[in-house]
Image (cartoon, rainbow over all chains, first blue to last red; front, side, top):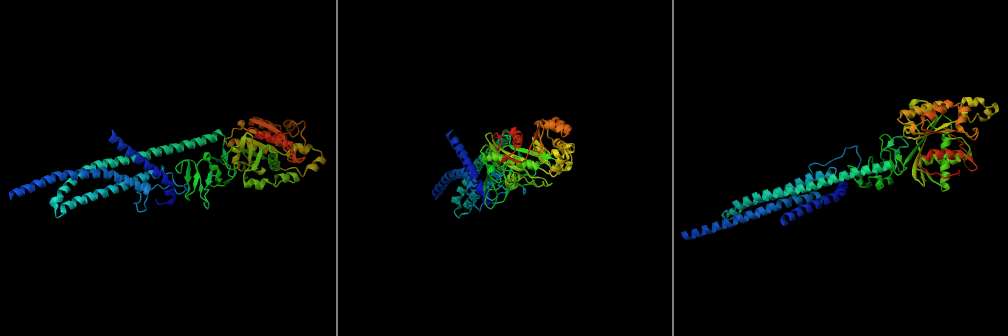
Length: 35
Length: 505
């Protein structure tokens, strides 16, 4: 934690994981409402 | 009067009937939606915002102290630690939201106008209860989705790393690339690399895809490094990965198949001179454009740059030190591709005693061997020479023990190293063709009849899969290397896919 090299190395991975999670959650929500 | 009370009671009951469910509905919606949102906000705090004020993660993976100085790959530990951290931060957010609701409900019963606010508090309690159940389920679903993403990504990344590692190993095998350290003679499964970063001296022992990176890895200094030869890792400075050696491998190992060529024989047999003449020949071919031959490291260049001058001057080479030799590394580029040639030239004293020969572990990595014999050192031959001839050649003759001893000792040690000699080739090279001529050009017969080495000749043919006899002169002739050296060099390198030019330069 707070190691600048680790923070830099993981930044893209973390954002991808967050975006994927958000997309799946919102997708599931939309699917529930639509269906 | 009673009518007014009745009206107020009616209005209050109506108010309660409307307010309680309305507040309950609002509270249920607030918590049913708020808790998942609070969790996702926590996820965002951990994965995107990364505020320094955020609470510390409960645990953080740390690689072993003596491991490579690299940042662990995200999906080899940190992703799960982040998931755990996100759950904690999300839970904190949910608790904060819950506590705010509880405080609002408590306040509703404590106001001066509690008669008015209390129904809202009652509705809030009911709504919070329902909202808690729905919201907790929603937050749990979000956590599940996050864990699912991390799990699938982890499995995918690790499978990719495993596949890439396997692919790289398979390619090395297909291209017949088997690396050897010229200093410690050990097989190098994969070169270790120094960080290419400026002002960084950190060394990475195993850069292949794995816990520190799949396609690339991050050095602790913040420099990115390639993980595979496929991705160009050979452009970095390589060194031997074996502890205790760790010497520089300047010849960019892994790019091309390697040829290990050991020279052995008695002291003063002419091994070093033969190496010098082969190297001079290769460089001549290179200068004439028939072949690319260059010293692949500074150590080789430092020791062999003088080879041509030594041969031209006709002076003797320095006596080879008894210390373990370092291989001379030469990069050969021919029409059939690039090869890394390791020439190992150990002092003759190393071939008389088992313990000294055993240290020459490179013998166990070779498939072609060069046995060098000075015909003048063979007593039976020397004794038959005329007196005046002996007086003439006495200064050249080595006083080493019989060449048979060095051969027997070495071939037994090579076998003891697990090498199947029936799959190996042996070049038996009799030196000094410039002063001692072999009859008819049939070197084997000459060695048997004139030198009296019949037993040894028979033994070489029985032990090795292929044996060829040469009589060479490691001297310059007409400005070029003696043609006998070219014949030997062609035979020695023929099986390893080196396309050598014809003729003698």
